Structure formats: structure tokens, C-alpha cells
Amino acid sequence: FARAEFIVDVPFDPFLPYLFMGEEVALSIRAWTSGWNIYAPRKNLIGHQYRPLQMHTPHYWTAVGRFLERPLITDRVSSKIRDRIKYMMGYPEFS
View 1 (cartoon, helix red, strand yellow):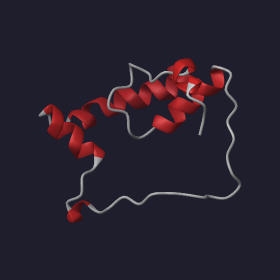
View 2: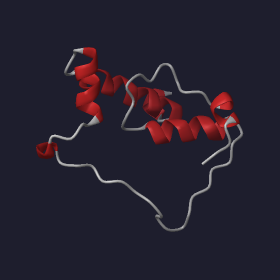
View 3: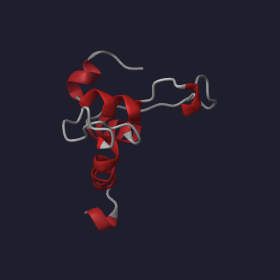
View 4: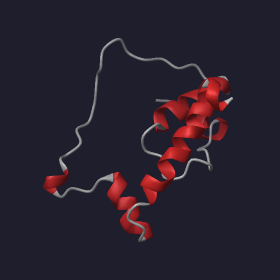
């Protein structure tokens, strides 16, 4: 949780479209380097459960493809997104 000014100080990265896996890491890196402190409870207090695909509930990775009428769009951009996050984290092979 954070104050609303967080979004002003740490806006969403326009170069990470359709980001799902890695969003928390990327946002945390950008928040920390923008001067925000990050705290975490010692125990998990809340979570969420992904429903199996067989239950026919909406999932991010299929909803984006359906919306854009490009079923595999998230698969095609995922490796580029991961590379950007690795660069942000300072992975030697991406520096």
C-alpha cells in the first residue's frame, strides 16, 4: 500500500506492455531507485488463487490476446519484457 503520490513518482513503465510475470519486481526496482522504502510483513497475510483453465474463468494471458485479436501476443513479447527486467536488475549479461 502507498499514498497516491506513488503513481506520480513511479509511473507505469511504458516500455513494459502487457506485463504480468515480473510486474512486482519491476515496480519495486523503480520505486526503490526513486527513493521509496519497501516494507513486507513477516508472514503472508493475503493471497489469491488462480483458477484452473478448465473452469473457463478469465485469465490475463488469454484475455489480452482476445482483446487485441492476437492470441499469442503475450508469448511473443514476454522474452523482451523479461530481458528489460533483467537489465533493470543489473544482470551482468544485460549490462
